[in-house]
Length: 104
Image (cartoon, rainbow, N blue to C red; front, side, top):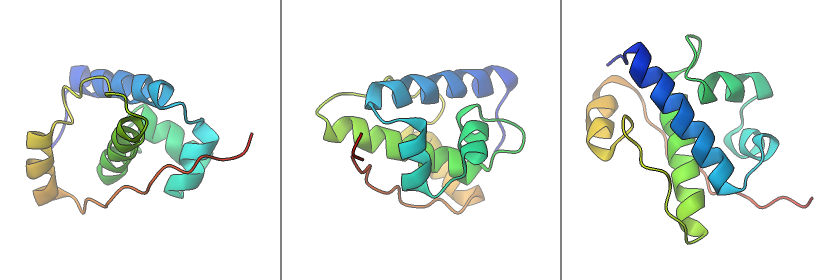
């Protein structure tokens, strides 16, 4: 399963928009996911060095965090539930952790 350049760009925009909507900082997300800052940045931009399983993990983490706040994520146009079924055949998808609210 691979994405076109357009899909990569769209997915990156959706991840960034949903990170902002979640109210979670990059540092909090990296900590919760066990990612380095560099790995999170690469995953957010769906860069060439990003792991597709990480992209799905971040998507699910953000989706869950937003819904737990009582909000609705920006629509996922590429990383849809239907696409997850196909992706699960290719990648070892993991369950997203719960977002922890860190003290400021």
